[in-house]
Image 1 (cartoon, rainbow, N blue to C red):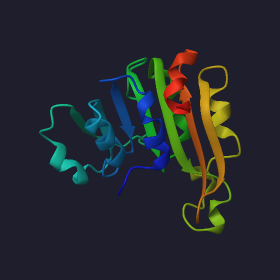
Image 2: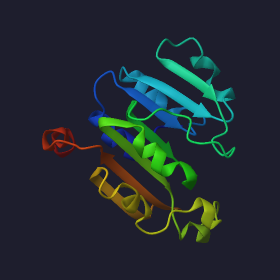
Image 3: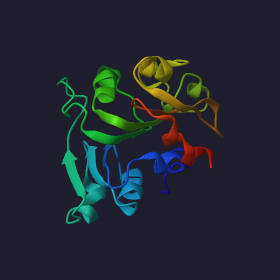
Length: 176
């Protein structure tokens, strides 16, 4: 699968050669994009079968892990230049996830929102963001670069790009 247009759009904001965390990465389509751009990527998923081709890649760190096992967020504070999350929601880790961003780090989040149940799965409110939920998560903590919530084809999504204490000059690549 091709990387999400949302993730591609804002990938240039990530510091050159930065460390990226791809949460619930699946086949790694987003982490692979960042590897191609010269970043180091930590791929995390409970099933890593689709990542075997990256096992010997020097900048790929593949970790098989169930993030929903009830344990605390397993990643260090202020360690990542970017955290990428698509089509995944586990609320108990959201606050700690934001805390894992370095100064200038980018959070790129895109997942299903309330209203998606009319189109298909997921339908459970446990896996659907409430209106403005990502904005509330980062309020007072990160600077919002872009946010969307609405129908995209046959799904309802919420998308966020936010920067940890971004300086205005960091935003120029998006506006160019």
